[in-house]
Structure formats: C-alpha cells, structure tokens
Length: 442
Image (cartoon, rainbow, N blue to C red):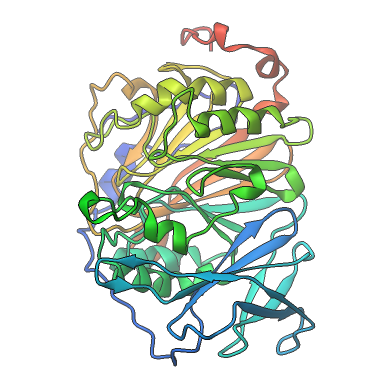
C-alpha cells in the first residue's frame, strides 16, 4: 500500500505509515474460538460486569443459575468490609430451548470519584473490586470493536491489561453468539476479569440482532438487551440501543449510537440525539465523542456503504455539534481518516476511526481499495488485530494510540495528538453550509 500522509489542520500529528507497518508485521490468521465455563456453585455470581449510571453510580450486572439468589450488592472501600448495600432487579429470557440464568442488575452509589471499591454480589461467592473514573480530566478510554471470543480476543484483552484505563468503549459485535446462546455466557466469563474492574460501555452491532426466526417470535436483541443493560434512561433515551453518558465530570460526553435502530429524521433515535446534543454547553463539555457500529467512511472492500444511510441522515447533527471523533467497528481492520464532513476534508468535522479489530472469529478484512473515492481522506489503514486508547489530557489536548497485537508484545501502530474542536473559535462559529473546503484552503 502506498504511503498516505495526514491533513494536519494545524494539529500536531505523528503517523506511522501503512507501508512501514505492513512490511514489518506478519498478519495473523483467525484464532480458534474459546469456550469458557464456570465451575462455581449455581448460587455464586458469574459473568460479572459494571457500567456507568449517571454521575456517581455504577450498575453491577451478573448471572446466577440459582434463581433464588437476591439481586443484592454489598460494597465498601476496604476489602471484606461492606458498609453499604443496594438492591436491584433480575430478569431472564428464552431463546428456543435455551433459558438464561437469572440476570441481575443493581445500581450502587453515590460513589466517590477515582476511588477503589470492593463488592460482593448476592451475598455469596468471592469479592470483586472496581475503580470509579475520575471526576475531572485527564481520563483514558480503551476502544475495542468486534471482540468475539477467540485466541486473538484473549491476546487483545491481555494487551489491554498492560496499562490502566478508566472506561472501555465497545462499538458493537460483542460475543458473536449468533443465536448460539451459550456463547453469550462464555463471552461474559471470558471478559469478566476486565469487565468487573472497569466500566464497559457498549452499543450493539449486527451480531447482536439475532432475529433470524421471526416465525418463532424471537425479538431482536433479546439476549443483548437482557444481558447488557446500558443506562439509556438516564440520558432520556427510549431504547437500550442508543444512549449517552458523561465522563470526567461532564468534561467529556459520549454518544452511543445504534446502527441497527431506526435513525431517520422521524425516528426516536434521531429525535433523542438532536435533543441530547441541544443540551450540551461546549464551554463546560469540551470533548464530544460518538460510537457507532457500521462505519460511515470506509475504504475497505468489506461492508462497503453499509453505514451510508445513517451517515446521510445523522452526519449533519454531529457536524453541527462539533463532535471530535467518531469511532466505529464492523470492518475487521483498523483505519483512521482525517477530519471530514460530507465526503470532503473539513477542519471542523470529526476524525473517523474504524477499530473493528478486537479478535473476532471471522478473521481480518485484508483488502483496502486504493481507488476508493475516500482513499485521499484515509490517513492510516492496516488489517491487524489490536486495540486503541484515547487519553484526554485537558480541555484542548488528547492523545490517541492504536496498538496492534504482535504475539505477546504490545506493538505501537498509529499515534496522533488531537485538539478539541471546542478550542477552535472558527469551528465553533462555522455552520455546515460552509462544509466543503479544498485541500489548499485547509
């Protein structure tokens, strides 16, 4: 692949070119699927994970095979000393001949920021621990898409553990169960060591739909909605498929959008998104991120134009709000674009990053099209498994890095310093009617 250089738009940029990366790295084949089983008693918590709820609460979710275990979490700041407790609710679902265990969801708090807590689920079993995110910048996000449960998934998770982070963002395609419901259980057991310690905020992908058999009245997203209940109500959303949340005390706002929920201008998602963005004061919220599954910009041969309908309907909302970065998955590779609006380079548009390379069973999407009409906007692209990290340092600066999996090593593949659009006076006053610029003007 020929070397591609970035359009810097005045930002400090460090790029490791695709040509160098491809020559120095042998891309791996798909790994075998890992199936994880628990040997704990039926009463003990399994598949434990946490998510952010509001400004100072966490949702603890887990499953028990014993349906008589209460939805109760005891917690405190000292190991083995639980001076607080909270109760919640449980649910279950059926999928053909499969019946899930009891799926518990308990919101705990208020909690102190940047603090380690110890907790126990259902009054039985072992102790877990988590750390709350900070209430101010800096804050660090990990991003992994299309994770699955293969040997390469395990490699990605181990690489994530090399250094700490505050929140994990996953733009869809979690378990790759694809109607094989026990794989949902296996996936949650596989990620429990990470997902029980730091909040995992997820949105849905196509592999979460699981509605291939309408004659049997199996509702779309039945497993996903029951198991991975996100805090959609707190952002006034009507659906678990799209929501938003604040991080770092509101200095960052994250939009978790639904590629597989209705998104047209008359849809609930569109109306919610427009209202959610209207509430933001970018002087108080200098960073605005968006997560979606199907990419709006993509030079890979895989999944061409599958996000185009949503882009046409929603892109203007994100541009007018001055979203800083849009992350997506779906394509099993890594690709980073310059700032874009409406298929043209634009210094006030979002940076687009595809990070669908978490380790899925389908393998990598190798073929990038040099002649694609967006190829001149693509800064870096590589078909390798890996993960990304976004460290938001202050109101103006953030540092993005993408690590490829290189056997047991953590291998830096791409790096970029980013300035927030809220720090640009010209971008905060420009309207989308001035959307297109020539390269000379940039």
